[in-house]
Length: 129
Picture 1: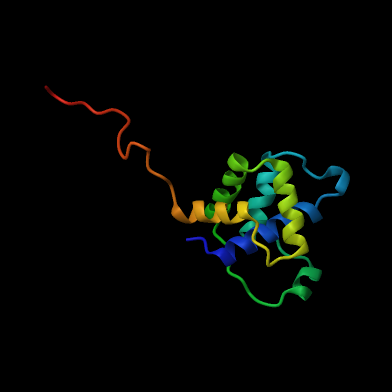
Picture 2: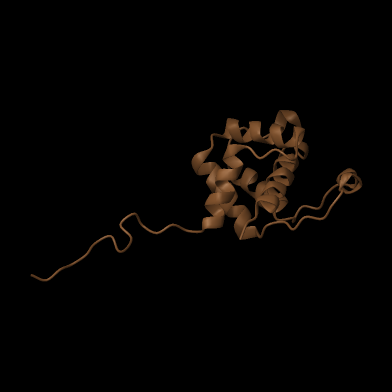
């Protein structure tokens, strides 16, 4: 299950990696394979922090699983325009304690797990008459 703290850490790490690992002129301007790869890898801890990040670390945080990171990314793609995703990057970078509404919604959605069909069952039902 994805906790608020681990989700925030995941997004914070992911968006910082997205913005700091690519030169400004080459920064992604839309969702795509490279953005997904970078997000999931940094969110789950597959991208090692830089020496500067290590020096600034004040506490250990359990990072989400790869599956949780994929869920977060998929939520952003489906629900959040890329420009807003980029703004969230800046907000979290400026204040790592901030939890933008879209981040909270993504964490809540992923913590709830897959949803059942609106009908509560199979799409078709057969009755004998």
